[in-house]
Image (tube, rainbow over all chains, first blue to last red; front, side):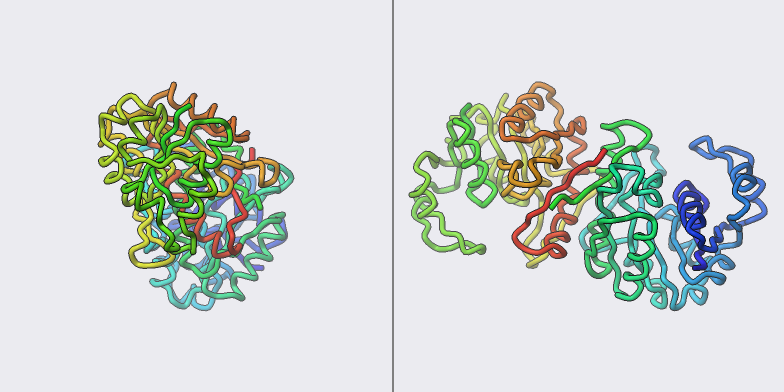
Length: 226
Length: 226
């Protein structure tokens, strides 16, 4: 499938790599493709984009709008607090009728580490995205999973751990579930409509606390034992 | 040990039962012991207290204050939105220097099911309790675990799942960890000081969402796979 991934951070790169290796046509969306491709300055994690793009010529780069327009499935892999802006730049028309996979968390890093999160059982980022882009078929998934395992679940405990999907469009959810299975996910728990994103988005502080308790790099994942 | 458990709901009863069966002297704290012991009216889950007390004569019943005063360890097993009131009734002097195990979640059932939770990475019920009772040695644990597995972790997947502890008093945390081990808990993850309760308290909405997805009664538990 043609998949547009919005965001060139660690999550966006890992997803683009993993999905391209399955044979999907992946295009990475960014604000300014020329600037992004030439970026040699390391980010906060010491990662420079330019060498990565040189080493991964199969990953195309486009504006947010072009990446969305060219794709059947769009993935929101941006920082959660920027997601609505980026999706606005992608353009409602380019998202209309498309599956929009939201893997973001609305963490606020503005006051340093650990990031803060204001959350409630009455709201979620995924629902704010769905409300802002009613033509998109939003499916929330993978936001509770560290980027290294999102596309390589088999790298930990032979894949014996869990992820969640939720969304208001059953067909979109089924397509995303199939995509997850193709990546090796075995335990994909359907939590129902998009309101369940309130619950999965509230898990991120525990993920961060575990990072503190178990150390870097993140080598853990949640499993729902039953 | 002498353990006072505040709250006669499902969590309080299960904990008192499990801890008494290990040989601990358990006293259940309630607002009005005479009224509680005679209560034949079923609660919202169809459970009547009077026959349970008749069947469990080893569980003593006392006022919140007496239960706390008589005990070395106090457990807050009350509804989270009532916890500060109940602990106030137990009395700061009766909590002074004691280990206070907080297993509560600040869920708000006032608007029906599912309960709502306002949560933030800047606050937690456990920290509010610690601030209100600075003499108590608060340890948060088991609040992410369904009551049926809190004292019987081996009943699911031979105990192959996780719970968390956090608190500001290392000795208190070590005692609670030992108590958890005596119940059969094998994977007890120390998340650090009490601020980590922000993270574990935010997990409860996922627990409730899973209840919806997987059905009643709750037969699941979280495991941190690594």
